[in-house]
Image (cartoon, rainbow, N blue to C red):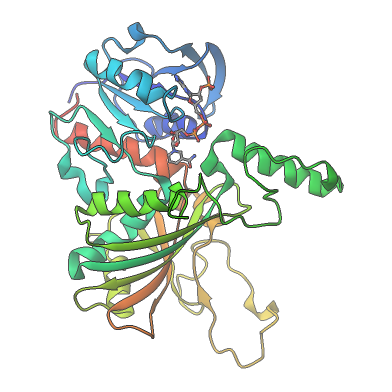
Length: 372
Ligand SMILES: NC(=O)c1ccc[n+]([C@@H]2O[C@H](COP(=O)([O-])OP(=O)(O)OC[C@H]3O[C@@H](n4cnc5c(N)ncnc54)[C@H](OP(=O)(O)O)[C@@H]3O)[C@@H](O)[C@H]2O)c1
């Protein structure tokens, strides 16, 4: 496999993670990643000072692959520059939403549908962050019993809105700490996010769902190649800096129950990218997600609760061992319907929800001899 030349467009939180992820995964690079944004400057990316160049046609020359992590829309990076990169001979892997539903462009989660990518696939899209983690968690179950209906509620971090969302939450938290909450002036989110949850992610549509909610519907159907999977979503912004969580209720055509789901999702060969954190607190694995919590100090201790349970939370995705995983817990039967289960899943929206996914796609393309 020959060394490759890679480019990166956009240096917000996602671009920063792509830069780190490429270094961490030891890509054989023929030259440093060519980093581009709207204007030239030096900035720290992945802990290194990097020259960021003002995006221009000639910067795409000679590149094998370009990761796009710019803003969306007509003036966004991939709409303006994606074709330019392709014309220069580079494969494009795009984090943005502009082309995800284009029937001629594959929407790829490597654990689910990498086979859609071949030498002729010059432009590849990566799904929305909430969609990726749901597909990683559900694909192994779908392969066994085919999903019929999904009801999902999300609990999405401020960084899902980019650097400005993260900054707005952080500044509100600082203002809370100094007691100057009267000065709150939310710009990114429609209401103050610190100490609140906002059931409004992206713009409202005519059907009264938000764009984020409908992205989860259409993108998931496209990834599984099955428009008959009924999906309904509620997307909520929560005062968490990084990490999206989802409560998922899923009904299957075939036989499925919590015990089977637990077995499938715990098997690394059947469920790549999934880490199950579920079980009794007496389990010897208890405490792998975080330091052990002393349950003897919990308010319910001594009140007849035999067992407490372990489960993942958004804080867990900041742990080194889980930064690229989709964590699954709270797996249980839906007692109101047959072949239906509930589960909770958590992932880092900036890594597996964006950067890791695109870098894994490129990695797979290299393994398959498409790049390099
Ligand atoms: N945040 C998430 O959780 C998440 C998850 C999945 C997918 N995504 C998608 O990933 C992309 C990046 O997200 P982010 O959160 O990192 O965004 P962000 O904080 O808004 O950063 C966007 C970056 O793109 C650059 N940019 C914007 N328009 C450009 C153009 N026309 N030409 C060149 N560069 C341009 C900006 O340049 P300057 O720095 O020079 O302004 C900035 O560095 C978005 O499409 C987003 O929808 C985000």
